[in-house]
Length: 160
Image: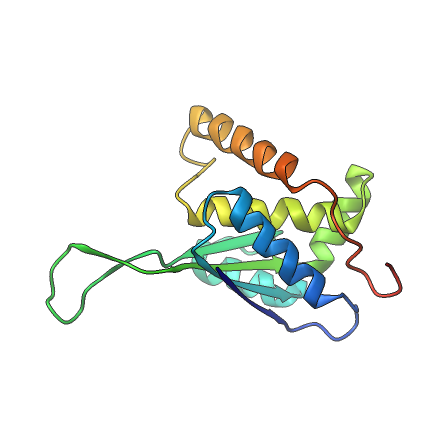
């Protein structure tokens, strides 16, 4: 299991090592302990740009997931999937996460755990936009993963 964590943010200080550990715990709780995950923290402008480019929605969003688990072989030009350990990329807008945490009345740490879990489940094939039934399935799985996490560490600078 491996998590590649990057942040394009300068204004907010997070304990990236703690967020890295949390993402690894989420992978284990989601049943993807041997998978690799790329996690990127961005601001609203970058997220809006990505959302516009990849989803044709000209607004910021909280999390985007770019699955890479099944790729098509370019060498053989066959449509058969090649399994990769890399699940894909999860991109989170930290300012949007902060706003959502405030609206929900919980800590930023909790919101980040929810967003990493949500993005990871998308990479594992869950898609709440497919149907109401799939949305319920994904919501149940999300709650299950979050329960398995237990205590979420303090991620903001100055916390223990």
